[in-house]
Amino acid sequence: MVNKLFLIDGVRKFLLYLIARMLISFFTLIVGLLRHQYNKGIKKKGVYQMERTLVIIKPDGVRRHLIGRIIQRFEEKGLAITEMKFATMTKELAQEHYHHLSGRSFFDELIDYMTSGPVVYLVLAGEDVIDIVRKMVGATKAVDAVPGTIRGDYALPGTENIIHASDSRDAATNEINRFFPLFDTKKQKSEIVHPE
Image (cartoon, rainbow, N blue to C red; front, top):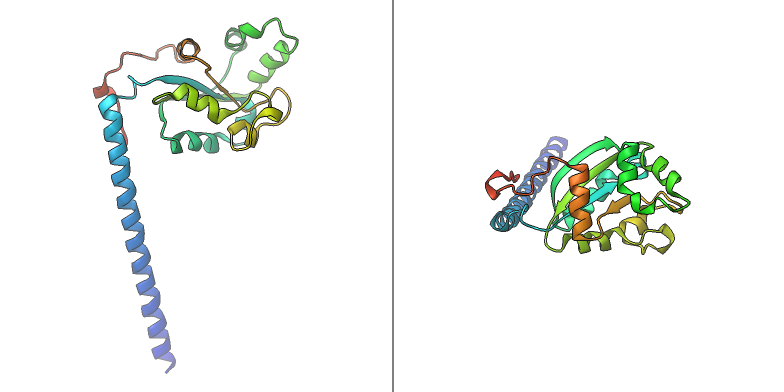
């Protein structure tokens, strides 16, 4: 009787395992098909012909281990990452990037903050990507940022506000060229690598 119970329990566990594996395979297939359709859409237009923007995950975002969470939001929104690098911003680059704030009282503090540790530079591409990313990022000041935005969810009061995003096409072009000087804006669709 005990052997029969073990046998029945073993068969039941094996059947549940098979069902779970079939469901995982089914959902993997569906995700693969959806990804394939999405990639076909990108290939038709080509991410290098789409609007691009620069995003910087600032030192506090890196220190607080928020890189993955922030990037995941952009990917879930369907934006393509065309370039990415991890580096510490030099003082010269920080001063060039924030030159428009050089007369402000917090300028030196801002430069010290931006050079205090590594950052993640991203070039994102997609239709209306500049406006989309700006809305996802939220207001500059943490206290003004709406919950659900990146700053609204993660930024702390003060100058450390997690993330930077280009605010216009001209700014995006200048910033991409500043932080990715070898970025070739004339890449052809055939040169784009898409994960399958």
